[in-house]
Amino acid sequence: MSIHILPEHVISKIAAGEVIERPASVVKELVENALDAGANTVTVEAKNGGRRFIRVADDGAGISAAEVELAVARHATSKLQSADDLARIETLGFRGEALASIAAVSYLTLTTRSRDEAAGTTLRVQGGEIVEKNPAGAPAGTVITVENLFYNVPARLEFLKSEATERRRIDEVVTRCAMAYPAVRFILRQEGRESFRTAGTGDLGDVLVDGLGLDDVKQMLPVVPQQSRPDLPPVQVRGFTSAPQLNRARRSHITLFVNGRHTSDTRLTHAVVKAYHTLLPEGRAPIAVLMITLPAEQVDVNVHPTNAEVRFRHPDAVFAAVQRAVRAAVLDQAPAPSVRSGAFSAPDVWAAPPARKQRFDVSDAQPAMDLPGAEPGRFTDPTRDAPEPLDVPRRTLPMLRVVGQVGASYIIAEGPASVYLIDQHAAHERVLFERFMAQHEAGEQMVQHMLEGTAVELDRASAALLEEHMGSLAQIGFVLEPFGDRTYKVRAVPEILTGQDPAEALRLILADMESGNAPAEQTVEARMAARACKMGAIKAGQVLTHAEMQALIRQLERCANPKTCPHGRPTLVQITSEQLEKEFGRR
Ligand code: ADP
Ligand code: MG
Image (cartoon, rainbow, N blue to C red; front, side):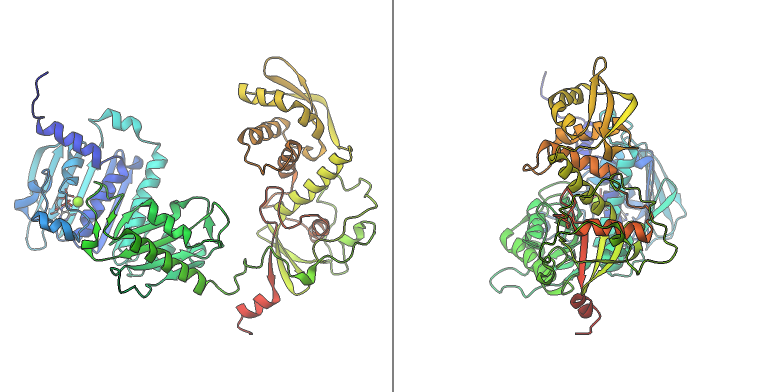
């Protein structure tokens, strides 16, 4: 083949592939144009996750009738005059590529009227070809409609994720733009329903309430600019970052903007996480929204066409500034003491009393302060009738008095000089687990025999795992018989699983064995037991009577490790009276 220059329409299709990856990229480019045009209100609509229809309307400066065609031409921009300007870009766009790229791979309709002109214009473009241009009556501003995105790029269409995923991406893009521009009103409608709206108050906190919800925002701490070092370029960091107790498994809840432009720069994200050093559990990340501002010539936004990365002239100064500002916010402003800070370290006054031999007395579970009318016994504890060992373990928690239940999930209890919030599911898991393991070690496994037996068919991988762990399964109370290819008959299950679907239980246990993400020091049997106890434990959302709660708490008080469930999550949160007094300003 001879070398030749590609025709323009092929070039724009290739270029489009770089800028326009998915419907959300279209939304991002159009919204950024609206913001660059000085819009006060930006309305975004999408249908079918943006595949079929995207419309972005703004009340910004508009485009004059004479320049409408230029707007959709490649490398046509009003935001950059010379290469010198590249060093100090203050608009979101500057490449002059977005509209041309979008137009190349969709049906695009642009209706616009410049603030300075009486009449507006409508331009229709299909696959990069202008097919119509007409004068139009329109309010000042611009409306761009993009239909049939990627209709001529089948490969792209194929790689799009589900509509739900694309919807979420669009949501993220609009939310981020709203965070960066709190003074602009944003309205997002997806599939005909309004899903997001901001009031344009200019206050980032208000946008966060719209985006994250009030509950989370209440736990966010303001980040304020710190004194900058005179020897380094000025870097300002402001925004919000979560108090340590509000955290997530992923870093994707850290949202960063550099000079108003969103970036997912991993080193910056890392700086935020590092600011929480020792304050967050390993592997957890905060929620943060930070606006980083520095002189335009200190940052190169020219690296990546979608600006996912930025390059700093003094990167270390920027990372240090981010880390310092976040650290200061967390250390200075975390409500002192935070409810969580003492949660898992009971003060020493509660060190367990000397071991006493005493019989576990069920009447213990219903102290005098029980509410009248509470009907005991509905909380059927499978091993309740089993003889209690004489050697009752000593208390590991103080005697707690149940005050009530909230959200059908948490028990509020009172102990000496503290209030406790107890996760009923986690607490019951712990109780069941310790009892189960005690029986297991004593060789007194309680099993539930099934007359008929249930046939369970497993996939190949699970069947192999089952063969491998047959011995451990038998140890904890499963009686299994081969019953044809990859099929087993379940003849008995650990008693804890009475009433549960045995097939589901087996599959979950085997899945745990496969994922292997349990603490390594646990035995295979303990890991299996932890899963069985999770299934057998009372669930969140289950209303408990006072007596049931009191019985559960009595059992928890005697667990060896009452403060975590077998999977290591907390069972209780403790608020000391000291903390309460501080919170209420009594001290
Ligand atoms: P860029 O934003 O990089 O300049 P675009 O292709 O996104 O490139 O847009 C090309 C030009 O069209 C812009 O420079 C701007 O002059 C004009 N334009 C695009 N969208 C709008 C809008 N919503 N309001 C006013 N002008 C717009
Ligand atoms: Mg643009």
